[in-house]
Image (cartoon, rainbow, N blue to C red; front, side, top):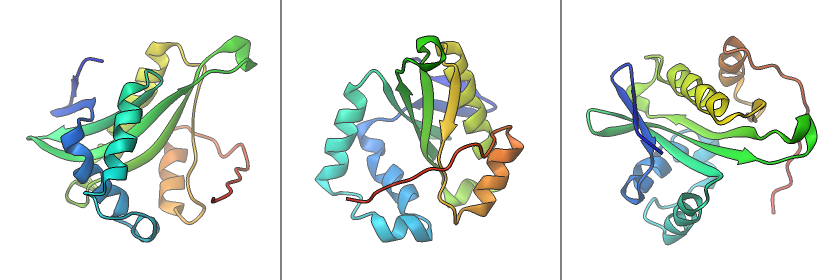
Length: 155
């Protein structure tokens, strides 16, 4: 995948050396703080290697002035519904504390939607924890609809 500049930001595939910054963003809220560990834990690098090797997964970072300030994972899911179309699942959307309130999240999701559309996906979907009411308003403002009930089972 090529790197793309969007409004002075670089959206690019994550590199192994980005993993500590990504994990720090994942841990930088009450939900993430309870489930994330040491950014140097080798399990994060093993997961990165698996994601990086999978052509149906993209771990993306937003970089500004050489600093990773945002991240998200795009997974392309095959299915028979919608005439066998792919769907894009957006996960783990995070913006660094230093970059919040500047419209970066909107630029990231818009970029992801455009990427999914260019790839031929029929739908873009995501989940958001019930407690993230600000995020729900944000996704509503981008045209997403709260159309399904989701279930998870922690193992």
